[in-house]
Image 1 (cartoon, rainbow, N blue to C red):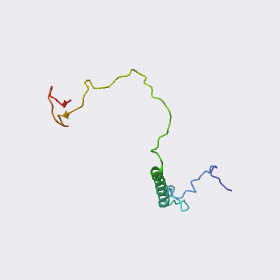
Image 2 (image 1 turned 180 degrees about the vertical axis):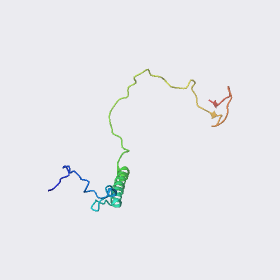
Image 3 (image 1 turned 135 degrees about the horizontal axis):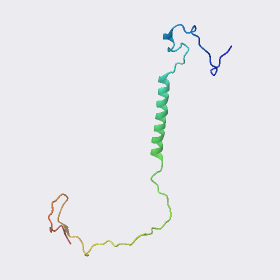
Image 4 (image 1 turned 90 degrees about the vertical axis):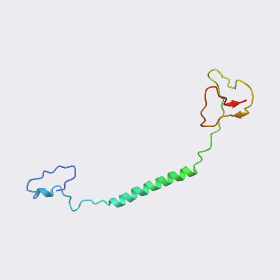
Length: 108
């Protein structure tokens, strides 16, 4: 009589001779080589990372997409300009200088 894995079988007390052997693995249990699985995982990871680096080095990402269009202002236009016309002759301060109120900073 064959027992499939879906059929239930009642285990009688006579079949279990030693209670300490119940939780131990059987001799015909499947042994998995974790070293081989680990190496395969690292190989897949290395190939994936190498492929990504190759794609990143060779993909033309710096090119723009040409498209026509027009910039439209949605609010009020503001003119930005200096209050008095002229050229800057000299800048009298440097970065880090401490200045006081009313001190001349730029000569036009």
